[in-house]
Length: 306
Image (tube, rainbow, N blue to C red; front, side):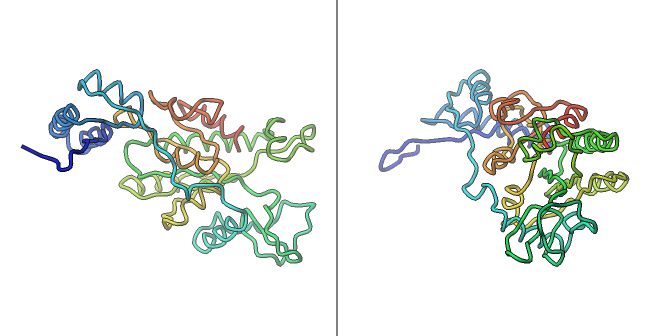
């Protein structure tokens, strides 16, 4: 018999997603052990916490456990990145990754930037004022993070990038509304071509080499893809520097939400996320992000969001 002195409340956080991952990794037999423990101690605790309303309902219906939904929040260091810090990170990454290096030919610019300025693919420092400026004609920066597991099918993104490449080759222009939002309103009547893309997929995991093999077979003229493993302190800085985030995570349990999207929202980053049942608790389509179901829908969203 257990006795707590002084008397205290027992608080449990329920992790149905962990149970689902155990099932994927080890087989259904091994799921029985954590499920039984969860049912037992969940009923004995004073309070239970879960991360979605879908999980809350599942716990009640299947386990007779009452829980309170407490949504995840981003850490304080996930925020928009100042242009100076963006520039420093781009220069650092340019030492190892080709897509971050400056283009040989600048597609700029009515802005007076010295050709001797320190430059990346996205930013340049004015040789006279010392200010960091976004390069006119810079590519759009798309970012996705992954642990390279079966939870995420990155062939969806690769096919969407093929669709985007076709849009660029066909001379498709940015929609007029996007021109205004991005500061190109003076070109609404003339039309602005879709930008080139740099797609950064961060992380490491068992399927990384498989997808790197697929990436090597792609021959894009307007899209560059790199798959770096970032230092921990660089990830939120890059996330806060990007133009668009893409999430391909599908919950194994169907009951939890992708933390990477929470972090992207912390950085005020627009997000395109693949559909699964409880995603609407985090991503509100056409409100704080876009939800897609296949590569065609994602390609169309890339055209609008970049």
